[in-house]
Amino acid sequence: MKGLGCYSDDSARDDDSKPLWKEILEVMLLLFLILAVLYLLLGARMPVPVVAVVSCSMIHVDDVIGSVSYKVADSVWPVLLDGRCRYDYGSNWTRWVGEKMPDADVQSFALRSGFSVGDMVLVITPDGKGTVLPFFSETRVGDVVIYLRDKRVSGDEPIIHRVVGIVDVRGGRVYNVTGTLDCYTQKDFEAKFIPYIKNCQKAYPGCPYRSVPSGSDYRLYLTKGDNNRDTDQCGGILPVTDQQILARGWIRLPYLGWLKLILNKVFGLVLGIPYMVLGLG
Image (cartoon, rainbow, N blue to C red; front, top):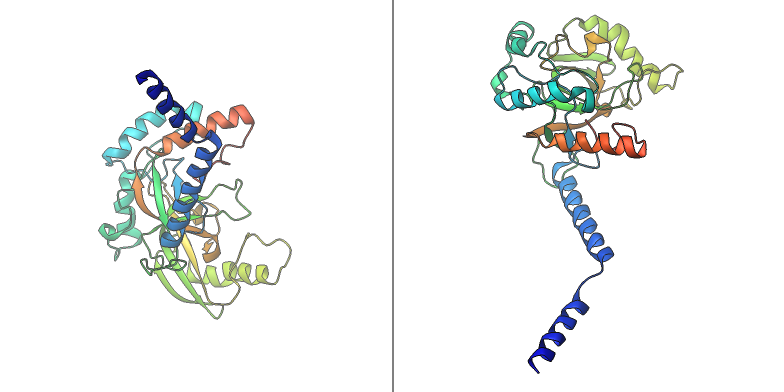
């Protein structure tokens, strides 16, 4: 009788077990719920509120955490990365800010120690909107943003760099400048970049922007990788519009991005998926 009792218990336990497809469905529903809550709380304009860093453009020479990723990247770049990871200008970042933006307080910058290839960054709303609660302010000089490239730049992967200049446009004219314009002047914006926006709004052929603001009041941003010598705009990228900005960097998650880089490479080789399909970098 004791043996029969054990057999009966095992049978009941087997009957209560869930099919594998139900367990997978429950996990997917849970992930969807988590993402939905994060979207409502953080407000980023992207499906997943994290980005994996795939370059060393934001690394600082004195960043202890980043130095580990730098050494790893220097060894694995032929396999996982598109180019070699190197310190270019990271040691001169504070000096660059002092020369270009003497009134700026570097200590107040978001993610002021930068981050490295192989990190992940939790992101938030770029303009303080799109959240159920008003946790966040709009983007300021010193913030890190994730933005889409314009048509003149090859590749469609988003870029994660720091805002070093903001041009407020009112009525189609420069109203205020915060930070630095680097190699440009206010006249350049009024004679060149603002007309680009106007032509794109009128749907003229040859528009260099993928998306532009709809009115005459908007912002244009200058951006820079802390470890890069020049701003993106002095390197050929157009000033970034509000519509190009997807999110703003908030919290650094060291080393977690390496998993994404490995998965991208594996799935890319096995299934022929383009390198960046599985995530934003």
